[in-house]
Structures are given as structure tokens and as C-alpha cells.
Length: 375
Image 1 (cartoon, one colour):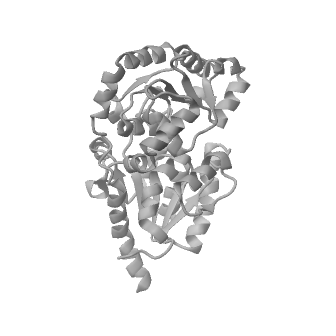
Image 2 (cartoon, rainbow, N blue to C red):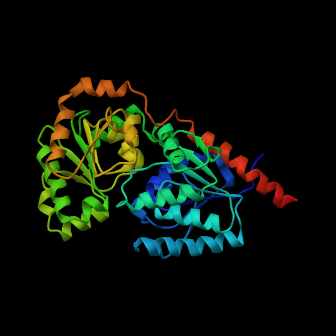
Image 3 (spheres, rainbow, N blue to C red):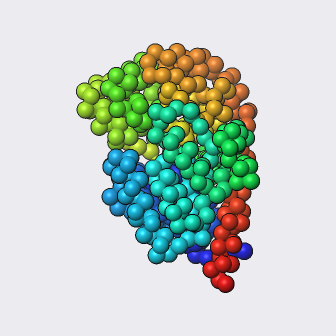
């Protein structure tokens, strides 16, 4: 059964959601209706991602970006409720653990619209993370929970969620990386443009509040990255606008001097640089998944992770401070042998068919709604 145009509302608000839902949107075709809450929106970042990924123009909500967590959720929820009342979708899709995802889930639940949660069952068991609260709440009310891994399914079962609501689909990040990674010739040109040699640099990102809202944590991260940089091994740091403002506010601009600071990168360009980095250092959740598809080592600068599948072979978890340098130097010391070992390992996040499985699940929950509407 084909779904009517704009009958599946895909509620998102951040760049990682755009990336991870791109293939699902393409497979749904005209049935997909993107609703962007504006949690992350500016032309340099989200606008560029929409264009680069070739996604259809979304319905944009207003008054959400830059607000507190409570205001973001409440403002998005009120507008989504109005939208879903005027034109009820057959199903709603949310991804991950953002404020946008929670607002979309609550709006669907309030209007008794079938809700599908992509990337269900992630758990850090860290109650200090707002995302942990979001993902747990979404999983309680979702009708279909698309767990990326068996471990995610086990987390849901341990919380008493009915196994009939859970499907292990794999993670959509696998197809996102495979489809968005530029070819070898284009990657070589990108490296040349940045003045980089394959396997001869470190690529870093820093954006999480736990590392940027604390001046001490931010100082520790930047100091460790600077200590890793050298003439023969630059540390490339695409600087998020929020992180840059925190650096300036904390008086830490001098710590950027040893680093090769760039503007934020488009997704394909970032993947190209990550594919040939000797090491990745980041606090991003998505990069913990992407490194397993790219076969690159990662030092994760966070106090906890909801992606234990990446730890060990591909990644290592450390707190801000000297542990960053120690972990980085251990990984770098493995050299070409270590990179070859990782390249030969399969990603623990699936086979690249997650989006196709999710579309089938969507059709299954939307079809009864479509039949009821036609009756």
C-alpha cells in the first residue's frame, strides 16, 4: 500500500536528525512531511545541511531555537498540536533524544497518532543528561520502537516494554555515512584544499554543554588538543558557533592558536576528513557511530555514553583533562596497523538497511489509519 502525500510527519530539530533521517525521507518520497522545530536552525548549519542532503522544504516552527529546554519543548508542542489537529498525519516519526523529538512524541500521543521512534533504547544511565530523560519518555509512549542494536532492545525489555513494540532495525547512520561519504578522488581534493595528508592529522569537535558551559572543562579540552598538535600532525577543529562564543566568553581564545580552526563543515566534507584522520577526538554521540563505519579510532570526551557498542575496538571514553592526551597517544601509537585493524571490523550498528526496515514498519502502522480514514 502506498501512503498519501505528506501523510507521515517527521519531526526533527537538529543537524544529526537531518543526517540520520535523510534516507528514510527519500524512501518515503512524497509521503514524507518534514517538520523542523528550529531547535538548531541557522543558514550556516541547518540550512546548509538541508540543501546538501537534498531534503524537501520543511514546515518550520517558530520561537524554539535559543530557548531553554522547557520553552523549546512547550513551544514546539503547542505548534505541533495545532498542525496535527488541522491535518492529522497517519503516523509521526521522531529520532533520538532531542527536545524536538520529545515534543513530536508528546504531540502524537496527545492526538492518538501512531508514533515510531527511530534509535530507541539508547541508555547512558546518567540522569544528569537531559537527553537521557527525553529518550526514556519517548520510549514509554512510542507505538513502534526501532532499536538499532540488540543491546538497545535489551535495555527496553529490562524496563518492561512489550517486545511486540520493539524491532531491531540497525542504525540509519550506516547508510547515511555510506551514501554521503565522497568518493576517493573528491576526498583527495578536499584534503589538498585543507593542506592535510591522509592519516597525518587529528580531527576534533567540541560542542556539548558539559564541555563548553564549564570554563574549566573547556580549558582542559582545548589545552589537551593543543598539546597534541605539531607541525607534522595538525589538530583540525571545526568550531561550532556556540563553542566559539563560550571560548571567547571564558577568555580562552589563546588556546586556539596551536589548532587549525575552521568554520563548521558540511556533512559530506566532515565525513571525508574523518575518513582519513589518524584520530578523532569528540564529545558527539553521532561520531561514536560514524567512526565504526569509517574505521577510525575515536577518543570520546564525555562522562558517560549511551553507545557502548562503539567502545573498546573503536572508541575510548575519557573525561576532560590529561586522560585525553594519554588516550590519544595510545591510539596514535598503533599507527597503520591499528587503522588497518579497525578498517577490517564491521560496524556494530548494522548493515545499512535500517531505513528500508523502518519504512516497512511505518506502512504497517499507517495503513490501518489510512483505511479508517477512507471508510
